[in-house]
Image 1 (cartoon, helix red, strand yellow):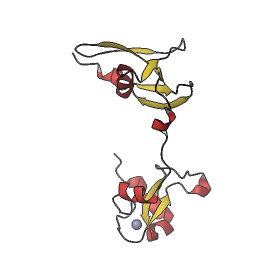
Image 2 (cartoon, rainbow, N blue to C red):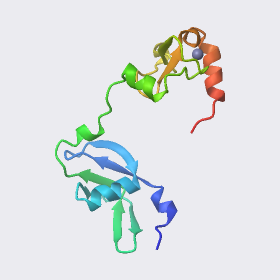
Image 3 (cartoon, rainbow, N blue to C red):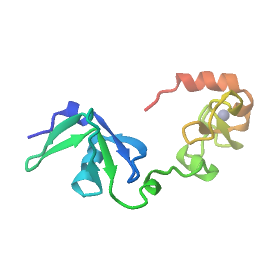
Image 4 (cartoon, helix red, strand yellow):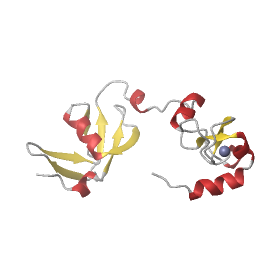
Length: 146
Ligand SMILES: [Zn+2]
């Protein structure tokens, strides 16, 4: 029997051992954590619960779970933005025009406008695009996103 797809579209909030909310994760990942004993169910009284089935198991998955493994924060900490990794992620091409020359890092939302120095706000850009920012943003908005 297949689990109902709509159930698998839900997400679950993961808490640390110290009950701090860490991240919202896909329900399938939560199932793995529960089944492997790395997390336990939490129930705040208002916590929703979904019944998930596989051919051999029926599992109650709550929308809040708590990690039982030590030092859990380490698993969720995102490493700081690193130029080399950003270039690699963007295949060493300017994300605005596709150039592979004179590459720099660009903040999609400028830091002066509150943009963060974070992985989703930093892209590879050539010097030219970096200096003609408004055209570059217009181009980015037209791009197809996956
Ligand atoms: Zn460019």
